[in-house]
Amino acid sequence: MQVLTLEETRAALPFGPLIDALDAGFRAGAEVPLRHHHPMVNPGAADDMLLLMPAWQAAGWGGVKIVNVHPGNAGRGLPAIASSYILFDRVTGAHKLLLDGGELTARRTAAASALAARRLARPDSRRHLIVGAGRVGANLAQAYRAALPIEAVEVWSRTAASAEALAADLRAQGIPAVAAPDLQAAVGRADIVSCATLSRTPLIHGDWLHPGQHIDLIGSFTPEMREADDRALQRARIFLDTDHARIESGDIALPLASGAITEADIEGTLEALCRDNRHPRRGPGEITLFKGVGSAVEDLSAAILAWDSLA
Image 1: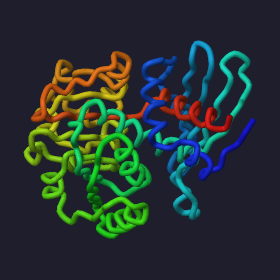
Image 2: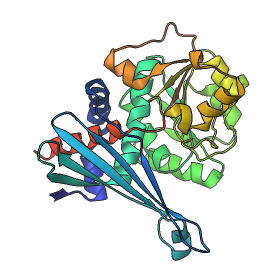
Image 3: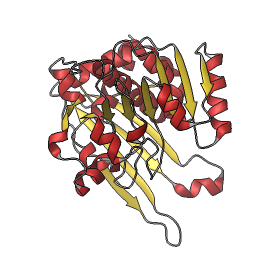
């Protein structure tokens, strides 16, 4: 079995080919069970969690992502999350490749958002606002520049220093980026708004939006988390990465439960858009919204791309 370090995993997953690989992976399809959650009890302390995310093709490849979430590591000076991805031969079961799971996840998450924007956003979108300055947010600028003619990037974070640091890092990569001190004003300037936060209260308000925008929500992955308010959902044409987002994300589950939106307001999934090769935007004035919670198909597609890059 070949083993890729974090840096080698990153090098094996350039965004242009990765976006195309996810598109092809959604079109090809795979068997994707719901992710497995296994709490590991720690008497007198926060529980740890073991997550398993498998996917496999009828023939060809399969894989599983293994994630350990250990909140107590904060007190040990260690990262709270450790993750690896194993790619295996679907016919023999032989393990072929081990990748850094955290890097694979961050890059395929950003690539999936860029893929959705390539199918949903205005093709002439040039101004990109990134809300959140964490690991995924740091990948979004490069991913979107591989999919659309982005000319300017703004970064907003609850912590101004974090936004300044990410903007400086992007400028060092040759990307024209600045920190945005005022979120509402930055939303008003943006063609695309990407949110990659852990917020439990809406950051993006529907009354701030203007015609032609594309809203990208990828931070909320539990039913208690939200990045956009009901009004934002009501003003937009809504698309999900997969149907799992209906129950996994508060951005969709909560407005469905309250009646702010209905099932009929959800117009489709990225999986179906790729399979049917659709670009459903009807005109330049529409507001589109993509909600992603991640799919093991994305992990598998990325790992196959990495394997092919080693040939």
